[in-house]
Amino acid sequence: MKNSYLSLILIYLAIINTSDLWRWDLGFFGMLVTLLLIILYFVILLSFFALLNKTIRNQKYTYKNLFSICFLAVVLIVCFLFPGGVINYKKFESKNVIVAFGEGAANCSTIILLKEDNRFIERNICFGSSQIKGNFEIINDTIYFKNVDLGNNEDTYSNFAVISKVGKKRKLIRYTITEKDTLIRPINITEYHLN
Image: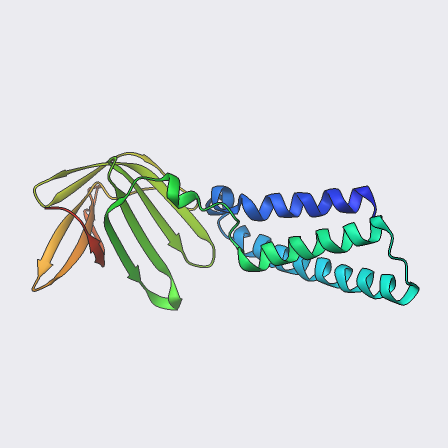
């Protein structure tokens, strides 16, 4: 295996293992990058089988060939078992206080994670992905959002949200105060760890 090919495979492995850090910033192009990474996986798989076949057929059990086969096998296995990367970056985040999830038309989804350290993350997946981050403050049943860092394809964000309890179910109802006040579709709270 040539050094340039080995370098490309190492770059591929680095991209896979750091994807959780950058994939939310790509928007629609995230789907294209994912498709490209899947195609590259199959190219590496074909290279593995071609090299294995060539080595067995020619009976060239050299150190270089065996190293290349083992290296490709490890890369393929790691990428198959851990498609989001070996490192679980969620372990480095603070615990969730509230998790709200909603699904809309065309299987589009929104998840809002309110963290213990008063940070929030909202992830939207709909023909691409975006991530909105910021801080929040809870006063009674109202969540106020501040210092909001808008993601791709976003130009405004909710000013506040109200936690509504109907029976045993809780909903998160978001509001935006603009020239014309708007109510954003309520989403279900799936985890609630507040007193």
